[in-house]
View (cartoon, rainbow, N blue to C red):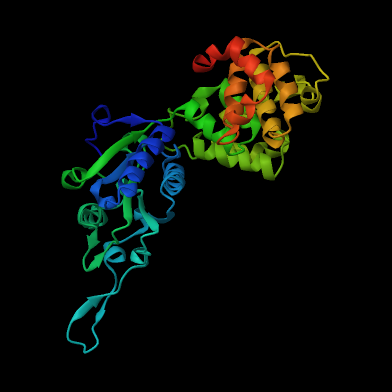
Length: 371
């Protein structure tokens, strides 16, 4: 959208947008008001920042808050023609009039125990003829003869022209029918998500040390591989499910985040050779502590990953908290923050442990200002 004023709409991390929108929709639903009480939403942001992931997270939060099943219909408007939205014309039964066959995207369950989310992705990349068909969907909730059910939330998403992606100017009449939010890259928000979704500890540790690489802002227009939360998630999948050996996985990771970033990632991963064995740390058998900042970030990430696999083994977690007392306080606070993200109610488990309570009493003030 050529004339989008980013300073004229709210700027939020994915996590904040998910929280804000899910709370708003859940409040309306729980008051038995129609979801169209709230306007359709438009999420702006660079490629791979997590807009689609955020819609899935929002659906889960709405489901938890309302007790209703959520169903997402994901429509990539870039691949659609206007006829795809309105349907294919055909003759009626007596062949006197033309009627329009209902497109698959309108085949939604209208049951009151279900909340549908129609996600119109890549709307800014769609030709203006397709965007025009979105007029009725976003405001009137219809296209031609076809109507969305009353239990359907409409959310659109797209890239900005400044992101050097395919993007057409959005007509003002359509823009004025939407609630606009710009999604920004926010490391702390991403890390909370990464810890709870088993993103590979080497990826989390590297990005904790090199936060600017979470999203590669300076992208040459012809550049095919570049770093975004999406490509780092793909790199994590390679390390988790193909090979954790960075030397073997390097060509694949380089094809995702680019040669330069991948080389730095491979070099940084050598710090893991300096770390004590996680088994020894969680068994209380070692006291060695890294003495460099990059190794400290690697340690925190490795400990969090190990704790995720043994999160309800009280003895192991207690030993790790005792070990955390010996590392620099700021890094200790980061580790405790990460632990609290391991599960939805994990802090309650930690609060039953004397070691964690003692840590809170002596260092808890550092949590809000952790690295």
